Image (cartoon, rainbow, N blue to C red):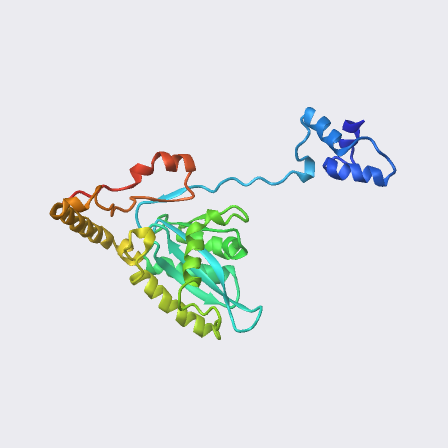
Length: 289
């Protein structure tokens, strides 16, 4: 009787916790919820059934960059204004290898057309060739709009998307937005008075971030230095200085000198097992001069 009721047209989409009270409303008691669950479990029917079965979303494809302008990440974030409930929208694109801000714009609305304009300008500024670049984003309308997808196709850019409601699939953009909104000059209390105010502030921030910010994820070189390859010379020099210091005062060193090497490759959404297995292979070993 339990199986007949659970698989009937009226109740086939409902779990036992809803079937039992529905039966009670009809003046019927067949069994307790726990008995329904026990019987359905024994018959391997204690799963999502028919229309109630949730959609499955697979982990996005992993992409690896071993140099700049191979994999970019972009997203849109809110910028608060002096009018309660009104926001400006910051469109922001970052290179995951160098962490450089390669493009940004601020508008009063979100749209696929504005996003595609930003992408065309960023590709032009960075001299991106056809089929050179992967662009990762979340699943918002501006990201998956027809205009944006058509623009990416014309540019030869491969689109990549996060799973719905999974912010961890787009970590580089999320991290950069946090850096922006925790910057000492970000107007938390005063907010942005006009869109021109927001654009001027963002231009100053982008210049500072790319050219002056010693990025902790880049062994304290700037994104611009990493983007242009200057980081190699800087980090090799730091390594030599540390080696010389150890030679002059070996008693002050209980272990090897600080590792100033940066990863050869940066992977977006890496497979966890593969990432752990190949962890040691991701780094250059800087030799003493």
